[in-house]
Image (cartoon, rainbow, N blue to C red; front, side, top):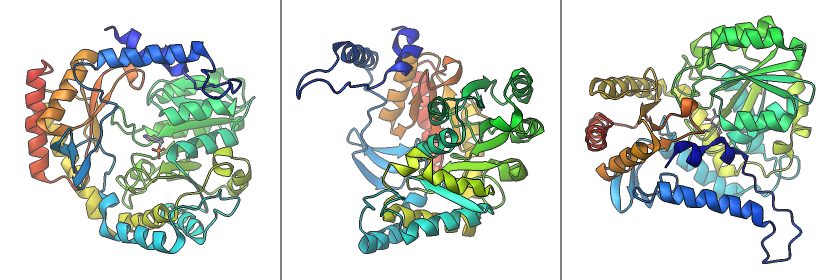
Amino acid sequence: MDEAELYGDRIETIHWNGNGTARAGEIPNQGLLARVSRFGRTIGRATADTGNPLAVVVEDMLGPLEALINGRRTLMFGTNSYLGLNHHPACISAANAAAQHFGTGSTASRVASGNHRLHMNLEESLARFFGRRQAIAYSTGFMANLGIISGLCAEGDAIFIDDHSHASIYDACRLSGASVSRFRHNDAADLDRLFRASPVPGDRIMVVVEGLYSVWGDLGDLPAILKVAKRHGAITAVDEAHSLGIYGARGRGAAELMGVEDLCDLIIGTFSKSLGGIGGFCVTNAPELDALRYASRPYLYTASLPPPVVASTIKALELIDAEPERRQKLLASAKVFHAKLSEVGFQLTSPGGPVGGVKLHGIKRGNQFWRRLLDEGVYVNLLVPPATPNREVIARYSLSSLHEPWMLDKAIECFVAAGKATDVL
Ligand code: PMP
């Protein structure tokens, strides 16, 4: 199976554009369905021997980082629970109490009856946590990017994004109608080149970068990139989805770690990783952003966050503040894990943060390695093109502050066994 055939750019253009003209039970458009069914068959063939890495079922949770998968006890090295807060008793009891009092869901948008006191409390907590004047919460991190980027930028504006940006940033750019240009990953000189070539004035340009890039696992070069953006008068947005709670003295993310929070106009993030819930946010000092609530369609036209999630997220923010030892342990484990993988001979993508990848050299071998590792009792994410830079196939691992040394050792043993069995090592 050729990778281009399986994961070519073509699949990025699949959209579910049902045209709504067919009667009930009729297939609305043979062509579109035929295309997606061809795609499904290709995936089926490519994963016939190994099982589909994108369709794993967690049959049960046996502990915060142990699950039942394919009937066997499996160590989880592919969650985004960096601080283990989705299992913290205080977060669980906050969620329980909110469900008892406010119900399981808000059943309405923030601009209708879904604007509970809890939502206001959450935004106040976020603003306080980041030391910013305002915060806006969205129902997912994906929607925060869609809402903020497409709410601020429009036709005639320009957006410059890092080549390794998350899909939600790409989609937000498309939705905005602005012209979009990518600069080479973490390359401030290439960003500068985009500015110099652009006919759009600096104050109509947004630069979007990430604090920690989760495919490669490397930190954004925020000082260099944000300085270039500011020199040209652009608005800057930093997505701290994977770095929130982990980096910086107070856990505010990569910008805090690097001392460049002042250069970030907008900090975007998610509740679905270190905060252990679901939802997204943007914090800023720009008072203008409050009006975005009435111009941001992913805020206006979707139900607000469920009260239990809001309550657990508020508690999780408090814990990030109160328990820095969680992030210290995570970073120490990440260093050990990375060093051991590298010592035994794996080629790694990242310099050793809480998320990283082992290069697997091709889809077939990648699938085999991933499956063998699962059979050994360790779950990781298999990342394939076009979700990866340079068409790499990667076993992406992510660590948690709840990983104990024995778990790290066991995982390394299993990585080695899988690597030897599939010629990755
Ligand atoms: N931004 C980045 C950089 C991400 O990595 C992700 C999730 N992988 C998101 C946004 C989307 O977050 P959510 O899962 O909360 O929608």
